[in-house]
Structure formats: C-alpha cells, structure tokens
Image (cartoon, rainbow, N blue to C red; front, side, top):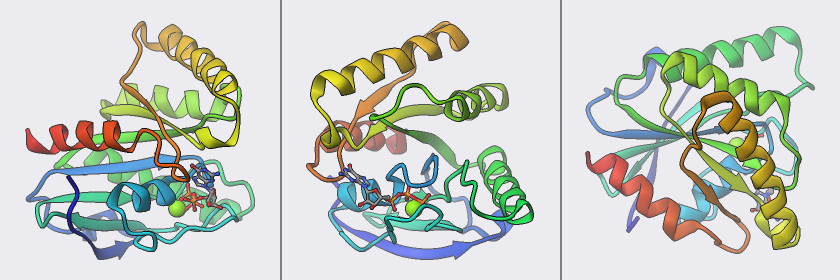
Amino acid sequence: MIQKAQFVISNSNPGNCPKPDRAEIAFIGRSNVGKSSLINRITGKSDLAKTSQKPGKTQLINHFIINDRWYLVDLPGYGFAKVNVKVKQGWESMISTYLTKRENLCGVFVLIDSRLEPQKIDLEFLLWCGTEGVPAALVFTKADKQSKTKTDQNIRKFLKKTEEIFEEIPDYFVTSAESGLGKDELTAFIEELVQE
Ligand code: GTP
Ligand code: MG
C-alpha cells in the first residue's frame, strides 16, 4: 500500500540525483503517454507529478519518496518531435545516462499507449533496454479511451512484436489513470520489486 508520497527533487543532471541508498523504480515512455498521471493515480495524489494535455510537460528527472522508504521516478518522455534537436538530444542523453548508470534502479516501467498499433519508437526503445540490461516491464495506458476489445487487440499485437524481438513476453499491466484500472496489480508488483 502506498500511504505516503512526497516530492524530493528535480534534476537535469543524473549525477545529482539523491544518494542511491534505497530501491528505485522509474516510469518512462513516449511524451503524453500518461506517465505523470499514472504516478498520481497509484500514489493517490492528484497533483504530485505535473501533467498536461500537451506533450513535453515533464522535462527533468523527478524523484518522489514513497512510504519514506523507496523512490519513484517520473522521467521526461521520448519521441517528442516539437522541441529543437539540441533539446531533444539533451533529454535523450539525460534519460539514457540515468537508466544505464542508476545503480539502485530495480525496475523500469515502459508505458505504451493502449489506443495505438505497435509503434516503432516504443519497440526500438525496448530493444535498447534489452541491449543495455535495463530491467523493463510494460504498462499499457489509457485503457478507458476505447473498448476492451480494441485494447486487447492492440496489446496482443504489441506483445507479439516484443516476443519476436525477445523470444519472450515481458511482464505487463493494463491501466487507466482515469478509472484506476490496473492500479492494484501494478502497485503490488512494484512493491515486490522494491522489497528485494
Ligand atoms: P510528458 O510529461 O509530456 O512526457 O507526458 P506524460 O507521459 O507524463 O503524460 P501526462 O500524465 O501528462 O498525460 C498526458 C495527457 O493524457 C493528459 O491530458 C492526461 O489527462 C491524459 N491521460 C493520462 N492518462 C490517462 C488515462 O489513463 N486516461 C485518459 N482518458 N487520459 C489520460
Ligand atoms: Mg509527465
């Protein structure tokens, strides 16, 4: 159970993140996929992480401390076309440095928009996680936005692609920050990861 959630610090430099002395998990995914909204939903604090209808809202590495014990991290999105190349490269290098160097990171949740057919950028990102040894699980978001049949169809297609790449299906969750679908399952899984 998440009983307490507090903002700790925002950083553009992964080297300035809090001392890596506790378990940490992070949310990543395309801009606007719903990372910050889902963090608010699972912590039960609607304005903990800043959200926006416009992509590109989260621009820094944001640490939150949960139950005074472990870190939950909200990251900027990838694949956001509307910033200039320099800014984009800056974000990408910040994210990749954080994900590959953060020694206390025990789980990375890659959020995927359940409304869409498999997207190349998500599959490429997952492949990158695989080659870098980043421990990724999938979270399909915005399931409230269409019928369950459509959600299931898109998820099946996505999982088939990941199976082609990895020869196995990663752990995955189906969620909605709007309705709370999948919140308990995801929270239980995260709590197990940070326990270890
Ligand atoms: P960046 O920080 O820009 O990378 O975006 P993000 O991935 O943090 O997305 P954010 O949580 O800011 O949400 C983007 C938009 O999607 C907002 O308008 C949210 O209200 C909406 N949204 C997020 N999750 C859901 C969901 O589960 N259902 C619905 N209907 N809308 C959602
Ligand atoms: Mg965000």
